[in-house]
Image (cartoon, rainbow, N blue to C red; front, side, top):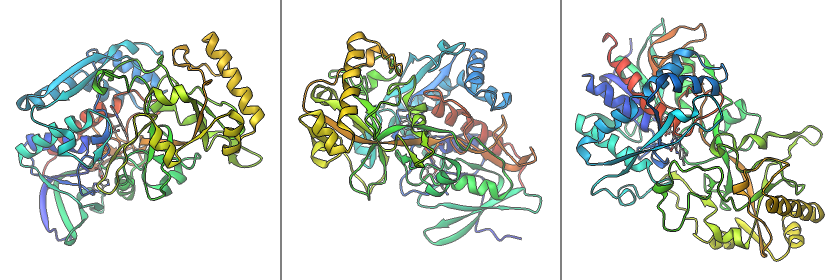
Length: 511
Ligand SMILES: Cc1cc2nc3c(=O)[nH]c(=O)nc-3n(C[C@H](O)[C@H](O)[C@H](O)COP(=O)(O)OP(=O)(O)OC[C@H]3O[C@@H](n4cnc5c(N)ncnc54)[C@H](O)[C@@H]3O)c2cc1C
């Protein structure tokens, strides 16, 4: 028999969007809730995000689209929970935010891929909260514009409900019976290991494993893959669920793009590229949410170490599949041909907009990307040369091939037709005005999608296909995106899986 230090009804592990929503819903159902958060500050990667929630008023159409993007890898009941929830998410958010005076807007945003019913989706987004300045309130957070607003709304609700939140308190292991019925967990508190009883259930919402190099190497061929924004998401919930027999799904799948490495090896994050129209003078970033991100000027091309292009630098959804073309392994040299790659642009491209977009929720780092990219030239992130020959010399690429690649690119740009790799015409920008710039480019993971399998009720499923008693998953701790991603889908999932898991745990018969 375990002697518990404290007893709660529902324990939630992780305080990002998913954990916050699970805690709110469990508390609103009458449960005594404890939230454990490993980091000294709450918010996970959620708070760095754009906060865009993908919604749909037509659950059947959303279901059809999501089923196609998941390519048969995800059971229908799981997709149903998400598609039904997408019809409720906007109302859920509006109700939560009601007392805050927050401004919530919606705008059309179709699915990223040309599948049936892609037009059914739209974005819902918190644009402002009266008397709340995200930068002043969360000075250690850098990222997109909307995440801090959405997080603040959830945080206010947790406070209102009196939910017990313990920061800097990582959950370590589940406590369970011989029948593998979960009864609580052990956590590392500032006062040492403590045993917490969960009379009804445990919700694992500890994010993915993007900051666990060992797990990334175990599950992915591609390496290295830099982590975009979070050093605490080390797959702890996945390991805890594995211990009680959880089956795993799509561990290979991550929400990933590409970007720069900071020259200081101590800086823990990759810096994702930033593209027009994220940056349009006179517009705020919020104006750009939901804008079509495909057919707009992108200042660069990518080339590999041989000086050759290898991918459409502006695929339908860069943050989803942008990392995949980096997988190309040379089977003779056993090197990834395209890692690192080089981003190449010219003087006009350099002036267009900031090329990098740092994100973190971390007191120990600071990184501002300059508006004109010149600070990054000084830092060595971007290398500058007056001629392409000189640029080839600095980067170690063959000059002849690099020049041919750029000449070919400029010809295709003039014709508005990338007949090699299919770049959208509106995104094509010539590379012709010296000086020229090159920056080393690496694959980057924003958040992982793989983790413990769950059913439509967010119950974690064991290797025999049975639910593990009293154990729930929410958010990216085993996301239901198993093949392709949908912009705004992860936060929709955080809300929907969060409320499903929180209500489910709070409805369990107390031990
Ligand atoms: C820059 C950026 C922009 C994005 N924009 C969008 C967007 O607009 N729309 C969208 O849908 N998605 C977006 N995403 C993805 C989305 O933000 C994430 O998928 C989602 O927020 C993950 O939420 P989560 O609650 O599952 O995990 P997180 O927010 O990462 O929360 C997990 C929490 O668990 C904690 N934790 C980990 N281990 C333990 C442990 N052992 N004990 C206790 N706590 C633990 C972590 O510290 C963390 O706080 C974006 C991602 C990035 C990086």
